[in-house]
Image (tube, rainbow, N blue to C red; front, side, top):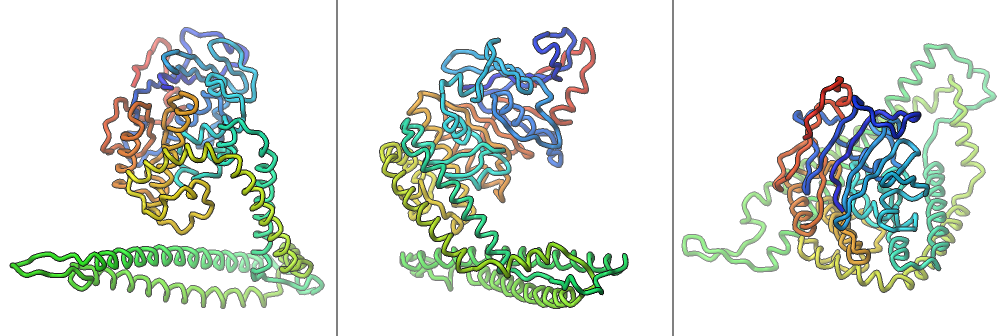
Length: 493
């Protein structure tokens, strides 16, 4: 599948099929490797919007972006699949494939690909699209974009065309949601709140007192947010120090000997240049963060006590939270949560029995990619396909793991359906990805997806891979339409 051209114009529902000679429209032509960017790196307007217009044109239900309602526009998308050309026309809820009405809940692209399952249809998008918001955080379960969900178990069951466990997956997802709700309630019960006595006549206050309270409350929220950021920074430093220590331990275990001035020298942490110095700097920074956090916590405690002892303001929400704490038992909530976790586990075991064959097929593809791109050995295990807890994985490893997973899904779809899907990444530098890491990841895409169309949207354009087409946006997608004048034909990018 290759996307050739996207045309965007203002939607006229009354004259939907009428082609006006001087209509305002803009065309975007795509190549085998396309970069969507802008001349000014500070200008981020339009790039995500253009990709969402692309998904809209394929027939997906997607969210708006930049405050713009794309459902008020008409799109015409030209693409080819296995040498056959298709024209997809869309304007809000009206959709046509090669001038024939498309009356289906499935996206138009799914109908063309002869995919008749909505869950598989949604899952396919997760096999070739990386969103700037969900992006590298999406691994084997979660939202691709908007309300379009990807679930690896459901995907593999759909591949196998097995509906026997469909209800189990739905029940498990509902139980997961309920478990998350219980966790939120537990967080409320564990929190400290400012309570008042509603019967106290002193609750009547003047505007100045109430304004002071709001300012103090805002300051408390700000302090708590800063404490969160400091804790996050400390965790990152802890991870770096841990990784550095593991690295030097391996170096020392290898007993590496180098020769300097005809003298053999055993490499250790003491003679590895700057290692101890960098470790000391990182530990000093970590200790500095701990001290700053302690100071913030002291400020938080004092300010909280001031607010807690201030009975000059009404707060119905705090009163409700107080009643919640009185009437809910932590033990009962824990029992309910454990029961749900037990049911989820039983359902999972049953589901896994049904997907062994596609699981093994997918693993054969994923395993090779993981080995080739240098993922840590501890993650090159079959169980990683269904792993739920990835919080402990460092940023670089997680990004590479997520990318490998997406590439493997793309290749697996080709194996099962003989479809070469494109590969689309919105903002490869999002999610704390550095320029160097982005280059490496795009090189990985180019290596494993040689014969596929690759479309990248990025505020920066200095990537290692060579693009055959570049679309530069100056004033956003819709802004370009306003430049059109009668008899003025805009040159294609």
